Structures are given as structure tokens and as C-alpha cells.
Amino acid sequence: MEELTLIHRIFFAEGAWLTFGKGILVTVEISLLALFLGTLLGAGLCFLRMSHNPLPRLFARGCISLLRGSPVLMLLMLLFYGVLAGSGLSPLAVAVLAFSLHTSAHVAELIRGAIAATDYGEVEAARSLGFSKWQAFRLVTLPQLIRIARPMYQSTIVNLIQWTSVVGYITITDLTRVIYNTASRTMQPMITILGGMVIYLAMSYCVYGIFAYLDWRDKQRDGTLGA
Image 1 (cartoon, helix red, strand yellow):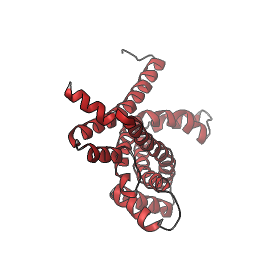
Image 2 (cartoon, rainbow, N blue to C red; image 1 turned 135 degrees about the horizontal axis):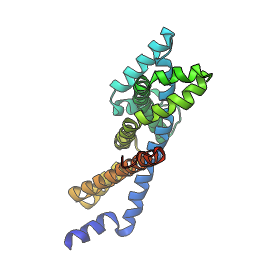
Image 3 (cartoon, rainbow, N blue to C red; image 1 turned 90 degrees about the vertical axis):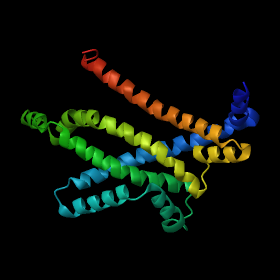
Image 4 (cartoon, helix red, strand yellow; image 1 turned 180 degrees about the vertical axis):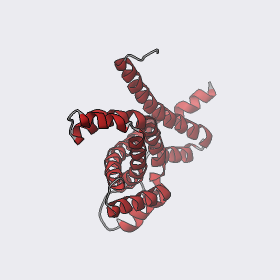
């Protein structure tokens, strides 16, 4: 009973739940925006990476190698305290940009690997039936690409949520910063950090649940459920 009282005091009493809620919203906002922009940028990088022209291909390879090999915290701090220090951009905008760039490199390689794993014979068959390149891609390659890339894309989203835990270094009060501040205020680091881990796990399992539903829906649509 004493533990429950302590949990209530840390996470719910005196509007504490509102503070945690705001931190969660900041984390979700950064994650969603960075995922959307990172996916678009990643698709563009993948297109350049697979270009027959050596210059765009070399540029894309360099960007991907640099972004994938750099710690996301270093990239975040470089942009905020260095490259964009005098730009007037808000810390939130800089964080979204940093995580978008970092995510784009992973998405680019994810898409490239998925394209390489698709059955090109089906594309050739579609082209022989009079499909245009765009029609063959949209109707044949894209559905295969989505299914192949989905598990890794799911992991990328979960990783992105975890990566956002460093945004407190550029003065953003996200979930991790709220946990740190609450632990310092209540002098209960163990319970507060464990509670924060539970919240992060809950967000991750929301992602897993969404993708599990998508897999179930595809199996049901294809008639392979229970096969």
C-alpha cells in the first residue's frame, strides 16, 4: 500500500500526470514528424542511391554513411549549437530536422534492401503485358516492397522513439526530461525511472500492435489467416 501511495504521489498527485502527459506529447510529436519527413527523405536518398548516374549515387552513399555512422546526439548538438545556432529555429524544429536526417539514412537502406528482395520477374511479366514502368512499380513492386520492409520499418519507428530521449540536451522538455526532473524533485529515482520505462514500453507496444493489426489485415484479405 505504501508503494501505491508513493506511485500516486510521483505520477498523479498535484497535476503530475499533466506534466507527464505533456512530455509524452512532445516525444510523440517529434517522433511522428521525424518519421514522416525521414521517410520522404529516405525514399529520395534511395532513389539517388540506385541511380545509374555515378554522381547522385556517390552523393547518396556519402550522406547515408555519414548519417548512419554519426551518433544521433552528436548530430543534434551539432545542428543546435553549431550549424543552426543563429538561424532562429526553435529547439523542437532543430530536433525534428536532426531525427529526420538520421532516420532518412536508415529508411533509405531499408527501402533499397526491400527493392532488391522483390521478385523482378513479376515486374517483367507486367511490363510484357503492357504496363508502364509506373504501373508496374505501383501495382507489382510497391506491394511487395511494403510487406518486405514492414518489420524493419517497425523497428525503425521504435528506435526513433527511443532516440528522442536525448532532446533534453537542447532544452526540450520531453518525457525523459520530465522523468529526470521528477526524480530529482521527489528524490525517488528508482520508481520514477521504472515508471518512465513502462511508459516508453507502452509506446513501443502501441507500434507493435499497429503493425500486428496490419499483418493480420493483410492475411485476412489474402485468405491466408490460419494457414
